[in-house]
Image 1: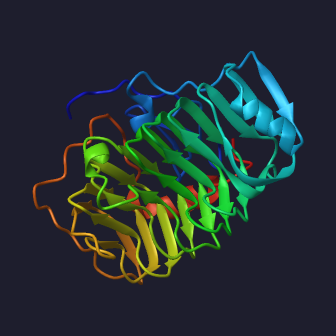
Image 2: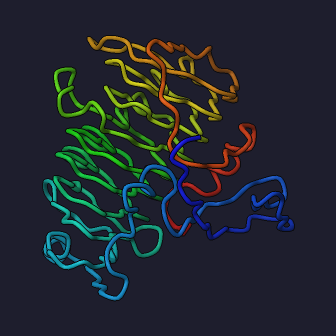
Length: 322
């Protein structure tokens, strides 16, 4: 592959059995368990990387007012969210922030986080519930974002929406459930002038559990990498590629998914989509459309075997795993 990125060192969570090193890949018994990377794989590792906020400047927040102030501060810092904080509306997140939940039940209810025109933000180990709009909204040329190990459910609109020319983003190890429209990538059919050449996102090791659609639903972006995710009991479809996007759907695990991939939805024109070695249980046939081709993935990676994805993701996705 071209544009080889350096391999990311991974902190590994042991599930069971002995650890064996084979050709540089850490394997734990029958389950690869890289469930707690210390830095992002995929697109968020490019373009200068995504180190997040300063680890030496740390603030712990327990109230809505303190959270809002810390998120919007111009200081490079780590914001520790303690408890499930009730907010109203969308809170803006400034550049150079790491926002991380304390324990497995800390996060936000009633509202969401907005990243607009910012760079270098990490959102990890957070619970999102009952947002009045999007749970996480990434927009307006925001770059280098890592959204990792969160638990998102029961929002009003999207759980993780990425749009308006945003770029170099990795969405990993999140658990999404009790929701319909999960992840939008590109908000409008008429926004090509801003989105073409951008919206490059890696979706890896996420668990979509009984959700309806948009896992993700893509416009314009090429290539988007959908790798080693677990889809269980999906209502409408898994992955959608539209508006001449290019999406590579690789070694995912589809269980009880009638339409694992589609190349057209809504009023959008079809997109390009290629598949490789997806594992299917009681699921339909993937739709593919190579069209003008799906571009090569521009970073190095080692995919997990498709039949092991379910065990790995269910053990590692969501909060309390880092």
